[in-house]
Image (cartoon, rainbow, N blue to C red):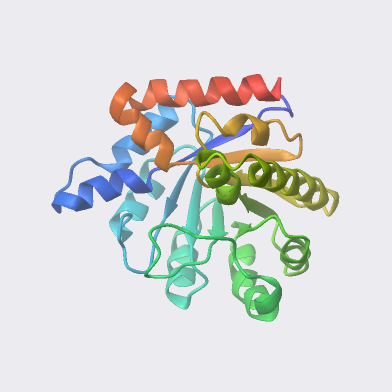
Length: 248
């Protein structure tokens, strides 16, 4: 695989959202994860939230057993989640902000203000062999703080750019995209591996995929939604095509 290969991480949270709407066992997020893996996903992402609104503890147990691609375990910086991560030792942990009242992750983590606390929080995870990623806005202060606390990876929050595109706010979209471009380059210059995600669709993915510093995109809600209409494998194939086209 070439150094230019842009990895696609598939987030399966919202397969669990549909399952939990009826309280049964169907559709099974593990089945979706294996299907995504077979369709060429480079990794699987799952966010175990404090309120367990979608992914469950049993889902994480199952993913650790069945996956042959890396698991990116998204979690809040809480003692409970740290304990779960240290028990499983997934390939990667991504520290994200979390509020019970939000529908989805609304922004990046505030690292600069919580630098000392987060440095102590991630140290045992790094010692256990997990790659630590911090989900942050395209903000130089936050990137510098993530670097100082010892994170190996940052994931840039692309939601503001995607929202501006969806709402037809072209100037806002352009400025958000430029910030993402500049901060991708800046983070890379510090030696951080750069990932990106949140809200990406067929219409918004290519400008982000074209950034040479970005090594991985994590995409979930859109792919799971598109899978309703065309199936998960074809939905992923089109995303992969667009990513490769932008990269080429």
